[in-house]
Length: 152
Image (tube, rainbow, N blue to C red; front, side, top):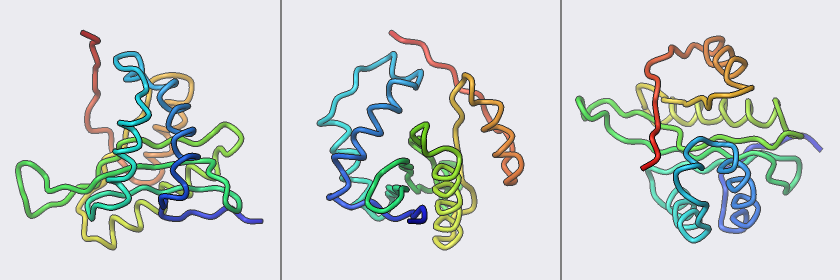
């Protein structure tokens, strides 16, 4: 069966939660707050139900091997410009690189279709950051900011 990308539905939530838990364990922000399943479920439900939310899943058949969550919002210094901002993007090791790239391409398609003027994607520090930065550059992205986190 070929890899497919689709909008997530409520039926996908149990598997999406498992993938999000894996993402949390790998993310620096994971060191500042424990994974709260109720909070994550609420976030996922909002991404599915609200017009500004995007929750994509990729996998073979009904499997959920990769997820991408994003929101669309007006740019704070020009409300006429809408940006799509990635919240999380994670593919299980066995799904890389095909599932993750398929999600990114689909998000770019949705963003263009919605009239967004830009997409903002992140890259976690670590062993994949150079490869991901290279992927972003090949797809036309420019590095804009570097974010720092301090646990309090």
